[in-house]
Image 1 (cartoon, helix red, strand yellow):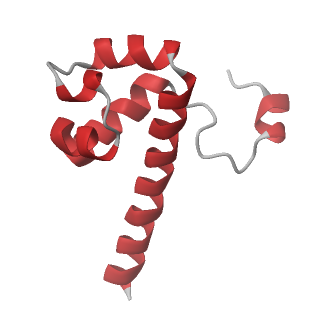
Image 2: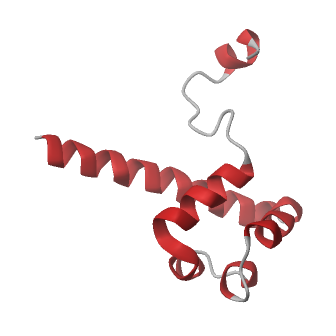
Length: 88
């Protein structure tokens, strides 16, 4: 059950309710590990990448997590722009 108070606090936050695992999984599905490593040059994406090793690193490294969240938001904006163009 969702908490109505937390939903009211962040009604327009696209990251609200998403796990870090869901964000990383979506980025890998969209960009692939190589594309992700090009956009955010950290070893956990470039050398023997896995969701588990990435999550372990990102949970301990706030600056890297911020970059991942920013890239996720950028990806969402790009996807929305693409869907608006194709529907026009």
